[in-house]
Length: 276
Image (cartoon, rainbow, N blue to C red; front, side, top):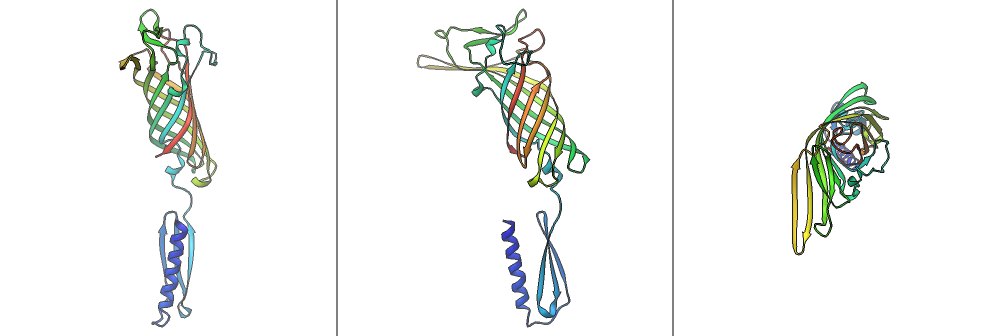
């Protein structure tokens, strides 16, 4: 598009010069115009020869906001790890066996800012956003909370009730603090990597279930405490090129409060669908 605009402007300049070939001579003049990051300088160098030169000048590096790669919509998959960092869950935790197709992390990263350390190459990125983490349960269980066992899954006979959808969901306000490095000050040439931590506050949690009984269909949504850890901390990394970004978050705090649920740690990996 920019090349087309420049070609049209060049043609207009030459037509104007030709149209003035028989008119009164004017003094040399310079006209400045700016289109995006490009400045166009029209210089009438020799009015006697009716010749006009066109100079294109790049205004420099991308705007600061273009070199922060957090704000936008992220989509990821949630994974649960045991205390040893493996995916195998013990008998007290295996009710959390996940259906990954239903275990999605939607992240709406709303605010971003960067404190420059060295130009646009190195800086501290801070931001804020909202995350909805769903954990689709593969087993046919009813999530229960009690003082003695904490949060657990009670297995239900599929003949009595066979869930077609069964998930836990927790919502968080997240605040990342990350060191971000760009390999170029130009967005179109820059690889970027950011690493740091993300703090979170649990806004609430719920269970959602669907099942059928003959021709009848049922759906429930029950809000509750479910013993999710109220304040969380993740190790976070974001890597990409231009506006393309992938991310990973590793839970440094367990999914549930200590002694109030299985000791499992959340991990989410995914991609930024669209930047803001």
